[in-house]
Amino acid sequence: MNGFRPTSPTPQPPTRNPFNGETVIPYTIRQAGPVTLNVYDILGRFVRRLVSGYHTPGAYSAHFSAGN
View 1 (spheres, rainbow, N blue to C red):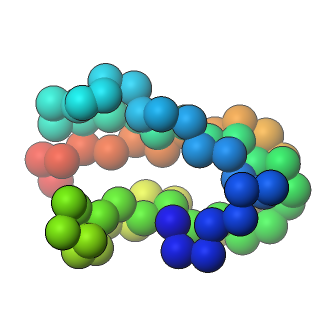
View 2: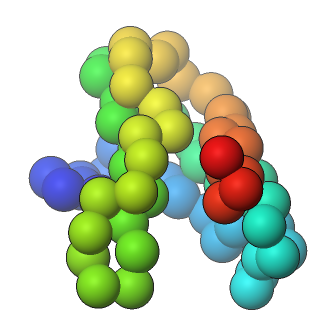
């Protein structure tokens, strides 16, 4: 989470941790604004962008499938 500000988004632990191919990553937005959620591998290499856009305050979830 490059530029992560703990007072704004609040990531939660992913479900199925450790996951086997598929997981859901819940997160909460406290202030409206742009949100980007990226996935990186254990070596820090970019894997996939799950979320990119403007969010209003609320609870959200991002689905990640390692198979595609």
